[in-house]
Amino acid sequence: MDSHGSSSGNYNSLKRLVDDKKVVTVSVTDHYDYKDKSGNVKSDNMGPIEHEFEPRPGNTGESGLAGKTLTPDNSLPKQSVDGDTHIVINSNLSEQGQAETFAHEGYGHALLFVEGKPYLHEMIHVDSGFKDTNQALNKAIKDATIEADKNFKSQ
Image 1: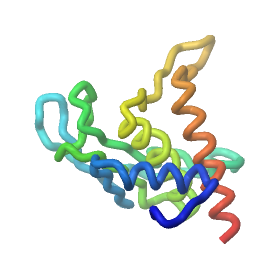
Image 2: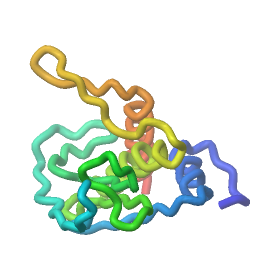
Image 3: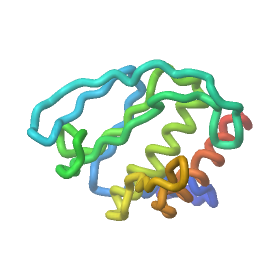
């Protein structure tokens, strides 16, 4: 990767993840293991994927638990089991959905965690809904998923 230069945001995000000392693993599966706040290792299912929404750039319209990023952050109710960062992609997603979900989890949550920046959604109640106030995460996810969508469609 060091011998290649690119203007691709996703390529450069991948390069930053690969170059970092922290280990990040990726799996495509229908379940994941996590450690709870008491240190107990448990397992959870990713669950089914529905087709509820009209597709738009960066989103296939699939819904459900598409992905999960587990970090060694002891303040969270679900943490990494081994001190590394784990990106889990729901195997029930379409291939395009998996690509977009990796962009969301990898170039949003995992990359910001590795960089020591706020990496979680920060939801506040607004009117009859919720708004995410973590603008850096929102921008990273939007840019990455839209690029992943374009890259997938250009194959």
